[in-house]
Length: 315
Image (cartoon, rainbow, N blue to C red; front, side, top):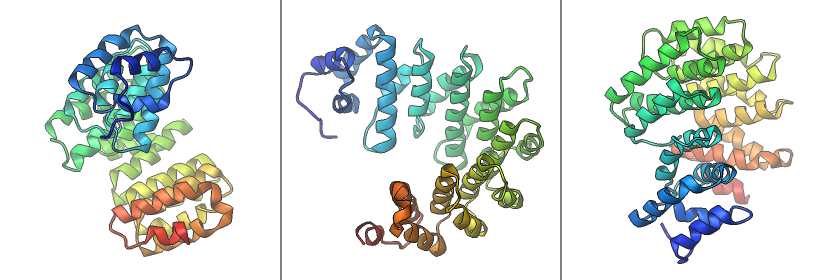
């Protein structure tokens, strides 16, 4: 990619690590580093102060989510072994779209042995991505087999912290394993509201129509957290049966529910969802959600819809 500056890389590192505030524009120089630049970075990183490492890693995660052309994998891979839990967690979030199966082993190790509960939960969430890729045929199944085994073990271990157990169940939702549906049903009946939410999330990840009636029912739950989770699950399920209720939830009084419904419509696709999202984009009352609506419409285009996004953006 085109580099932001011809400034010597050593000077870039000095500014990134020592300036009063992180110069975000220089972070792009960490993308697609040349071998000698990567060596300089790897040597300098351990000497950077804890708070600055955390800030840099967090900014890189944000850039990765907003710009598909950047490539910070070496930085995130290094962050997986950082002594600071917040940096490890950010690095795990940064590999959300990684396809390198070599990352599975260090991520699995974090889930199983890290001293920080949130880091273990973040690792389980990161492993969910690899489970999905294997189910979609985008990476080989074999490297993911120990992942599914480890996720099952984490979920069933009575000593596993609830955040890790929830993340493990959510990841297992995408796995083609004969025990998944029973685990989801067990979690759905759990007294812990958090486990129930994770069960609904996992239902959507299964893409199994057996869970559709439950998801549709939960779209009308009086608890907005449940409605939002069900809207997300409906989108992941991708069934048009949910469109009428998602249309209603796009006008919900709760911001998170509205946002989840909009995203869900974009995931499901089809003419009806396109029309609904187009109407929302033209509605001034939804101005604060216009960026999210546009992203949902772009998802429709990726699904093969015929919506002309620019008719709505410029209209």
